[in-house]
Each structure stands twice: as structure tokens, then as C-alpha cells.
Length: 199
Image (cartoon, rainbow, N blue to C red; front, side, top):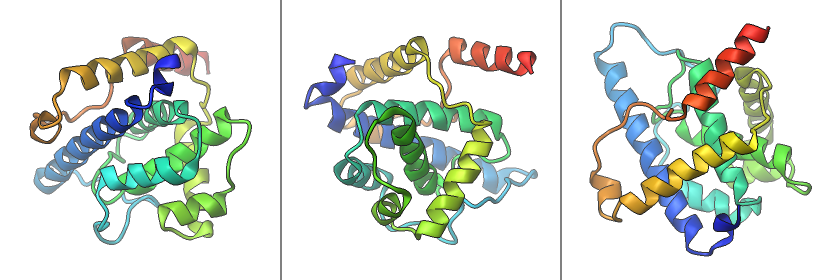
């Protein structure tokens, strides 16, 4: 996508993605507090809230990972797929950072011809190499190794992000109403159902 190469797009994309993930995490944190059904704890959960914001973390990943810009859209697709295939493991404040670094790592390995190894991504993400390896493995199994993103799916997700970025003003990124769900693409949901039926 040529639009991704525009220098002004990535800061907006990072701001919107971080805002969206922040709203989803906060919403799921609230649901966890009032729900009688507990959420599953996984390798992605930290023991305490990270001191770095989601936006700063995403900016750090963008600055140091040196992966293609498409990786961030594909990482978003992977996060969406992961949350749908693992409904008992919703994105929350304790796991969002680890899910982010892992989704970008997996996207870079799948999309890019050249990418850094897990030890490098672990340093970028502020975790150990052993933990990065474990997160990658758990993430891949959580996705059912479904890494292929069709051009139509990529375009749908990127178009959604573009539309939302143009609709939102910078101050509304912080003040927007919470959205508990990430999904928006009927095509992606339909594709996942067809995949399940094929098995």
C-alpha cells in the first residue's frame, strides 16, 4: 500500500492503534472487575501494569524494529484473530504490551525478507529472549498458525484504520467512547468460519 509510505501516516496509525487498544484494554479491565466469570491468565500477562503507555510502546517498536510499515496493519489483523480464537483471553492492561511486541514480531517474520531475531525484539520489548520465544510460540498456537493475510483482508483492515484516522481529531483519540470489540470486517469473520468448516 503506497499510502503507508506517506511519512505522516505512521504517527497517525500508531496514535489510533494505541488509542483503540487502550480503550479495549480499559473496557476489558472493567468487565473483569464486574464479571463473575474470570479471564484466563496466560504467558502474556504481566505481574503488574507496565510503566510505559501503549502509545509510547508502539512508538518504540516502530522506531527500533525497522520492519515494514505493513507489519503494523498485519499485527493488528493478528491481534483481532487472536482475540477471536482465544475468547477467554481478551486484551487487557496486563497483556496488551506483550501481545503487541509478539504480533509485530510474527508479522515481520511472515512479511519481511529481512527481520531482526527474537533476542533483538526482546530488547525492544523490554523482556528476556526466553520469554519472547515463549510468547511467539504461544501466539502462533493461539492463531492456529493462520498467518496468511489476503490482499482483500489487508485492504479491509487498512481502509478501516484510514477511515477512523481521518474521522478522529487528535483530541478525540483520548476522549472517544470505549469500543469493547476490535472486529469490524465481515469478510474476516466469514473467512475464519470457512476455515473452521474446512477442518
